[in-house]
Length: 326
Image (cartoon, rainbow, N blue to C red; front, side):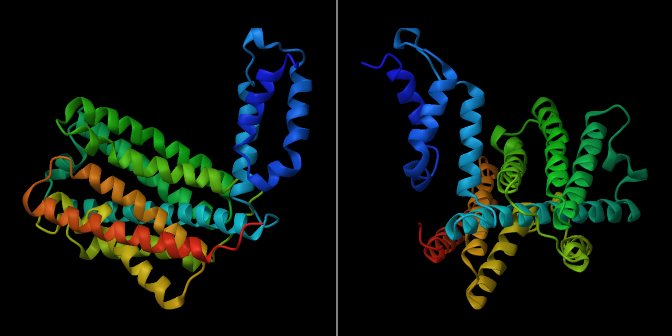
């Protein structure tokens, strides 16, 4: 009887993270290599795979399932969908950052905030700290999207991770000083964290960056500026607030994107990317409705229903359009 049987079973359990076609060819070879490196490990010692070994298998699984140009057509399409989700998500965050800056600048010029103090907060106050953290975050998203669109995916990933630091800080401040339900407090952190994870997973070492021309790179930033100039500031609390806040604008953009996909019969990556974004926005909007009532609740549930339809419709058609598995 093999005294290393327990460790072998655990290595093979870890290897199940890999695609089945890859395991059929290399599972025995990889398990033998891991066991050889581990040395003699009797079951009585309750041996386990090392964390670095698990991490290496997980990284390989990501690269295989979200493949680059040399992967199978299905894996490449799945990877392209995640990379497209990250690109569209960062474009959205960059546009929202520009929109917010335009709203804030317009309010100061219009004299809504005396000397800007109501906007920026009093010196050494929590409001001033939140303003500074939000400003740093906004700048990070603009730079991260621009660098990603211009083909510098690794730099974009580092900047996107850096953007999560001020978001985490502002979330902590709001938890301490603003009496709001915790789902609302964490909704923006949830949205941005998922998009950063998609960016890091999609742009692994086997994926080739795609460079957009400057006019397409600038388009989301220009759209954010135009929207900020003409749309009301949701902070003013007008009745269409849930359609002019970031999530509401995302709902409208996704609905328009779904129409374009249907008319142009877009490829599987586009459909799957929009489906994943719709599912993410649906989850975030549900978090925002934790204490909503009246017209806000009705509007929010309408958006959630629309996002659910988009998620299912785009997800099902996108999966059907994927190349057959090898």
